[in-house]
Image (cartoon, rainbow, N blue to C red; front, top):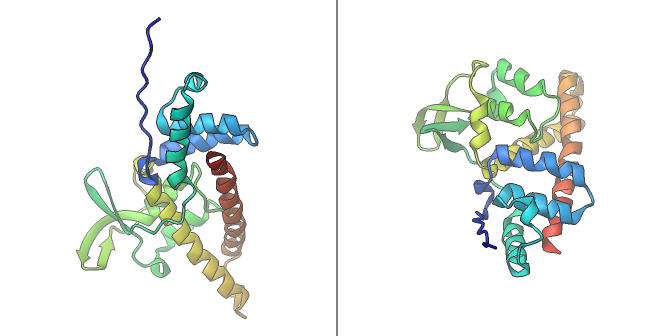
Length: 220
């Protein structure tokens, strides 16, 4: 019987994992909570291209090596914001001044009620990142938000960019929420904004705990 050779591409950073691949991975993992063997197989399948049916025939040495390589970066999600990214040869910049974000951009972000990496995240990213129109040193301007554009292009962007943007935004939102709680001007804040901040704060902790629980199987 001929021996079939498999070529696996093991990612070495979040930059090697696209949003599309990440969403597919998360969608499959949620069906196998508590099943460490299944979760490991799903991660190797989505992240390394290993057909699930070949997992049992994978040599122990290679199995351990793949787990070790994945564990080196998957548990580290405290990634910095990347202000500039390039997609299809076009430079995009993160919203230069969130405090002066246009009403249309703000309204389109807050309509999602929570801020998390799910099927709506690509739409939020297309609002936060827009083509750079002028740049001088650390100063830059981006194209005015018009509520249109192909958000699907962000599906091909690495998760290092997505995590960096997510946690930068959530940290700002939580700082705002804390300021609201300590302020006597709470009634000046739109109710939906308060709700989003509360939900996002709770969701962030749940999300972090979920990620830690999921990827802890790689260190066992």
